[in-house]
Length: 463
Image (cartoon, rainbow, N blue to C red; front, side, top):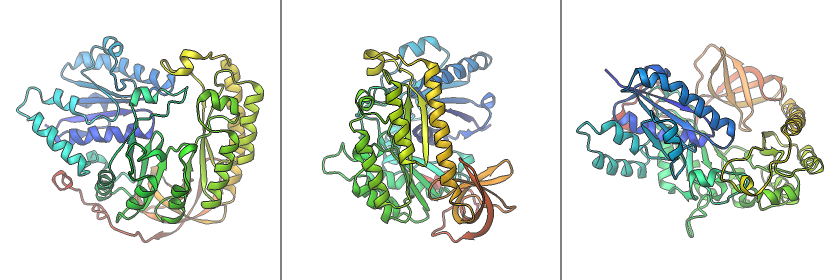
C-alpha cells in the first residue's frame, strides 16, 4: 500500500517553498500527498511566528493532532518553520512530546527522512550526497497532485535576514541572510516549468538584497534577466522588497523584461519618521515618497503594494495621522495591514513598551482599511470596459479565477479547461478587491511545458 503525507501550512509564501523541498524528498521515498490528515502516514506542520495569532494557530493544530497520534502511534508528526527556528525549541519539544521530528526553516528535510528510514536499509548517507547534488542541479518535484495543476509557484532565492528591524523575529528564526546560486535557482524554475508551472514568485525576506552576501556576485536584476530567458515560463514576480535596496537597475529590469510583471511589493510600515526610526527601518517618509515616484517614472502604471503596522510602541495619534496622510497621497494599489504585537526576543519586546491600547490599534486599523478600500475601488474602476490579459489559476465556486499582470484578481465563466492558460477577458464589473468579466479569447503561449498535453510525468524523468 502506498504511504501518504499531509502538509498543514500557515504563514508566508516562503513556507510554501520550504514545504515543497520536504515534499520532494517524501516523493522520492514513494510517498504520495493526501488532503486528509487523518489518513496520512506522515503529517508535517509548516509554521509561522511573525504574529502571535499565527503561532497560536500552530499550537491549536498540534493539540488537535494529539488524540490522532494516541490512536495511531505509527503516525509520524513533524513540525518545521519559524515556530521551531534555527536554534530549535526545547520548550516546544517538552510541551508537545508526541511530535517525532522538529525541523528548522528552509530545511532540506533530512531529519524527517532519517526518522522515516531508520529501521530500513535505506542508505541515508548516500541519499544525503545525492540530495545535495540534486538540489545544486535544481531537481525539484511537485507533490503528485500538483503536477500539471499548479500554475504559480514560489521559489526562494535568498534565505534568512540580516536587517533586524526592531519589531521582527525573522532574523532569529530564519538565521542570517544567504543567497542561492543563480544556476540552482534557474534549474529549479526549469523543473517547475516542466511540471506545468507558468509563473514563479521569487522570494526573500528582503528580496532586493539578493546577492549582497556574495562579494562581486549577481544582484536581483541579473537574476531576473536569467529567469526571463527560460522557455515555457510566462510570468515572474518577486517579493518582498525593502526601500533601501530597490535600485534603478532592478526597476529597469522590471520595465524591460517582458516576463517580469509590473508589480512591486515595497513596505513602508509607518509614515512618521520617529516611528520609522524606532522600527529601525533605515529610511524616512520623504525617501519612501521619492522612491514611489521613481518607481512610477521608470515603470509607468506599476502596481505598488505596501505593508503597514499600526499601533507600534509609542505611536501617537499625530504620528498615525502621518501614516494615514502619506497613504492617501501615494495611493498604493494594495496594503497588507497589521496591528503591532510584540514578539518575544525582538528589540521592541525587550526595550520598548507596547503602550497603544488594543482598542486604539483596531480603530487605526479600520481607518486605514477604509481608506485603502476606497483607493483600491477607484484604481480597479479604471479597468471597467477594458480587455485584460489573465493567467488562469483555478476554478473557484464554479468560476475561473486568475490574475492580470498587475496582480488584479479576475473571475469569469467558461466551460472549457483553461487552467494555466493566458486569456483575454473583457472587464464588466469591478470592486475594491477583484474584477469579473467575459472571456474574449485565449492567447497563444510562448512555449509548451512538458505537461501541456495533460500527461503525467514520471518521477524518474524529473530527477
